[in-house]
Length: 140
Length: 188
Image (cartoon, rainbow over all chains, first blue to last red; front, side, top):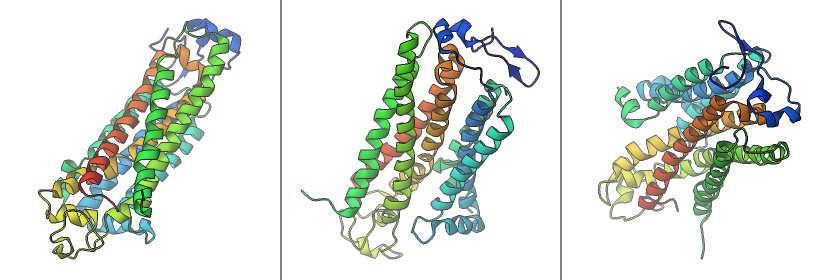
């Protein structure tokens, strides 16, 4: 049994074969096929990547006039300012990274705990980057 | 009883979509919290999962709709620079007007010490709120992907709850600061 309460075979980087019905007998009658954890890991890490990019762009826009002007181009004349670029790029990076990681790991059992902590670390750094006292300290 | 177009959009952004998000969050959290072994029959699981998918999906959609309307519709009205460099258009005002946008009003300090509402409150709100839809979408996809398997996987269930609460906290910062700022310098 692993920490998730499921029976698994573990190698150095991957895991295989969940037996959910052993932990929750009520699932036995549902005939659920086993699913690889790769897509789940992709969902966790991509959220962290998206928030990290949001925080990074927020800091870069404060620190560099060049970055601020590039991010401003994403507003398409709507008056949103550099926020348009920061948020649009972060959202795009989130969806693209999700699609890429999902595709790469679609048949693999990537370790979910490792993926979660990577996503959590990236998300925490990104959240720090969006905190005014922090990012305003990078102003020239 | 009358609302201007700008006030209507501010209500849609903050009150309508924000309330929908909060309702969906409550349902999603309660549903996931009780998704444990031994509590639900096989038939009950099938019925409950439909509501869980709907709740998580509604939360993700509401989060995206809230930040998109806030950033692309309401925020440009907030940040208009119409009062001049010395904020002359705000002189003597107690609220923002046609010559003084909410941002101008806060930065001008004509109605007390208000500029930190922009430098701290708005600057934090406008950025961190965008973490909410990213986390809500990933949490929704995790629930959709694993489905009833979450019952057997305590750690994974806890992980989704952590992401759900993270999304909620980002939304709370955005929503609470937005409500306070709209109280001090309303969009009208």
